[in-house]
Image (cartoon, rainbow, N blue to C red; front, top):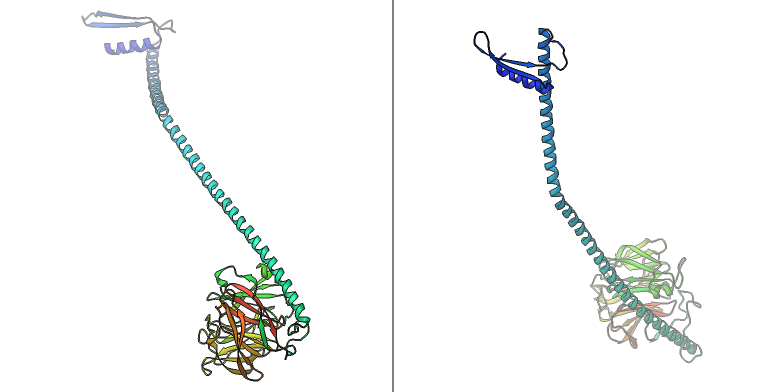
Length: 448
């Protein structure tokens, strides 16, 4: 065995536990240098056979290889441990920055929430301030309405006194057709001789009520009564809403009990209610429509032959008032004009069921020269101006005689824009719409 291998073997043997070894160097009998390495066995008392020695050497070599593998594994674990320590060091160095970033994010979130709370607080303060202002406005409105109610009560008391005075015979007396005279009778009729001061019952809330039409049925049918009131704001191009009030108090307070939506839009302020139906002119047409209020259905339609419409022959204030419906003691009428009459007013009596024309009269009063018209006891009356505070009822045409005459009965346009004037034969009053305001006029008729 070469000397180097002997040294390696000696190191291995020493490493596995031998603690006594001898190395000898001497020349052999041929004069060559020879190393002799002696190791005492820690387990064997005598030397084994040659094969056994070889097996021991092999075992020692395996043990040395195993120990090398263990050493390499230990080195690998040590390297992993060093890497882990290095990573932990890096993590330890990075962690404060991440923690700081997390705190910054939380701080930003808290600031955002604070800003939102401050914004909500400002909004609530603004809303509260608005509520206080609204409350103040409502209190003022309440005071105003209370004052109006007191004024109305005084006027009603004054009217009652006036009625009592008239009944005592100090002035010409008229009878209450609502109680004494059935509609259709001319008993209690006479010529118009006086129009009282306007009494304001209601004011429209928005500009859509600049002009309009309001009415009660002089011949009410179930489920309606003498108190049921209808109102239509007519500013706009698609007027369909009809507000219905069961009680006069609801009308005066502005609380409708129902809102009808017409199947066709109406035109202008010429509508009336009679015997449970609304009669109106269809928009941009010469067609008159009967709409039954209880069933909310159209019952009849009729074109008025030759009638001007949509601005051909309106009243002098305009508003497409070419066709104007009216009601008196005898029933349903329509006021209009034609090319044949060259703008003069034409009157036609209508069948309220099917709207057929029953009789027609042509007058010599030019429609565009007057502000409005109404019919009382078969006589047409016109008003001179819609805007003058001191207007007059200036013409009358009696369908019974075919004679017209001029009049000078004072008529007050308190709000200086009267767009609708109609007669209610049940209440013996004029209903009018004057610049957002719904008013009534007491009237006086002469004896027949």
